[in-house]
Image 1 (spheres, helix red, strand yellow):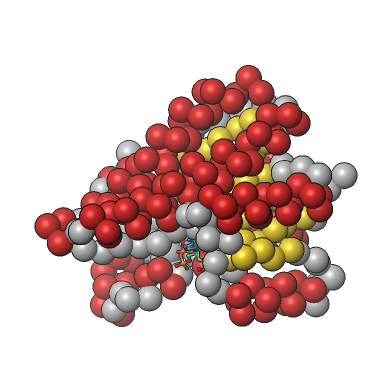
Image 2 (cartoon, protein in one colour):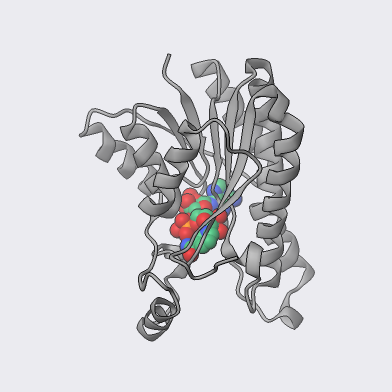
Length: 243
Ligand code: NAP
């Protein structure tokens, strides 16, 4: 029976590349989106032209009731969830002194609580199956910290904490949990960067290039197929951060 994967924030950016890669491999993909319905429909139609059928599902993953609805839908329709990719996230560039409680709560909800909540709603089925693969998309900022991105960096370090602790807890149930920590990627999240800033980032990157969604999608594909890697944070960053 084909494997079933949920990708949060799957209509654009890194999530979209993951959806395409997994769907092209023959995995049944449910691409979650929140606000980008048009993009989700456009992706579904694009893949249909390649004779690939994906499912799209609207849910704000920072809200448990919506996450629950999505997971219930997937279980009702497909009977299982083999793979969960917690990719949805928002950026927050602010001087530390300017971060309000509201800013803090918002980025925590969307980036960190969403991973807790979506994983919790999904893992109960993986525990019954005694099999599962969870991949959390964190960031080099969670490893190294990002200037003017304290709250964002905290969410990403928190995600890596979830990955490591949960991997220990659910390893005996044959569930693998890993993080992928991307470096600077060519997505809407960085659309605010100027041409000069892009050039500067390239210069500081040993491989002298900016990452694309496909670079992350290839790592996701590898982690899905592997069966002896868990609790790891794999940073795909062109050498920008070497620990
Ligand atoms: P992006 O192009 O801005 O896309 C963000 C995605 O997250 C969209 O699909 C968006 O869906 C989804 N999303 C945001 N809030 C959501 C919510 N409440 N519920 C459901 N979906 C939500 O960003 P990206 O660059 O692809 O980033 C993807 C992940 O990689 C994020 O976790 C980000 O932190 C991480 N990352 C990115 C970079 C980078 O340089 N771009 C570097 C390191 C880590 P809708 O549009 O439908 O709302």
